[in-house]
Image: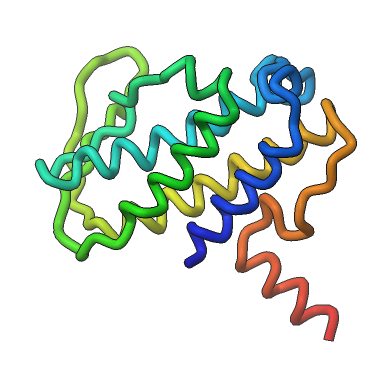
Length: 162
């Protein structure tokens, strides 16, 4: 449900952006575009889905599909499609990670599907914060109040307000 909520927030924001705004490199994003951040989110979930059957996940081997970062309608469609694939049962997985940018070697870390879903959700929220900054730079559209803010931060702020 949390993932569905953030995907809806992203999709609704994309619908309000022009194609130019979606692909425009942002100064505050160090030359990255909103589309590049959306592509990154989508590809992490695609990697998880693709690796589920084999039991091995490697986010570094994602496709980096230029079409996703330049076609906001495709991105919205992929977010909706991914949302339909998330209800898998939990199972053990292996996460392959390359921690050294001077080597192609990887290490294997035991994980599970639910842990990776949680990781991808948190990673998505982090990128949504950057997307929010990009949206503010290129447009006047308003995003939901909690867009790009971790649920723990929202809960903390609510507790402080009482």
